[in-house]
Length: 304
Image (tube, rainbow, N blue to C red; front, side, top):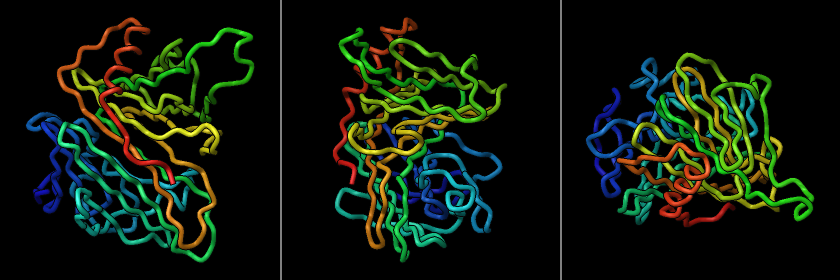
């Protein structure tokens, strides 16, 4: 790790894995504010009105990757994260920990480079309050505009081979199923960013435990845990995606549980960024290509 300036912040941690780097602010957050091939563009969204800012009691998104607590709540979710984070090196892991929020919830983001262009991420939330809390860790990666989110569909099985549902689809009050940005395919659900359109969101349960975001010739693949016998937020979603005019969010969710005082919830992800990618247009071929790239990403940890 080296300390650099980035985006208006004087102190940021730069972590390199092969030809890929992430940059994490030390002055606010925690936020991974950059993911990209070295010397090339940032694949994450940067909010031009909030970059470099610190302090204050107003919630600022900044862009990049953040750790939230689900289910979403107007008060408890939108806690300001405008103060410095504590950085520690623990073996191969880099730990970024802000002060606990006013509800006694302590977040921690941990990152480990695999040396091959990939990263392991651990999202931890501890309940330091005196009351149990129903919650799930919620990892939100805000991608730069212009791309398409690729979500694998469940494997087709003919009737009557399977008689029960295989996945939920969660819709929000502002979701239009006829939205032209959405494509409900047999092999993939696709959500395309469009700079001329406003917010929409969908959620689902991804049995394959991976999804992708293709933007030009860059493919970002995220792997995450999935456990069909456990509960997830928002009617059983372990993956959600939200978009508006300036960005697209690529979200995974951990297990929904009652977190007792003194206990810690942990949600794992694995990231890999591929450059120079050309994906086919035909849907089945596209799904097979995404599966192939996802095969190069492995996740180390388990939900807890």
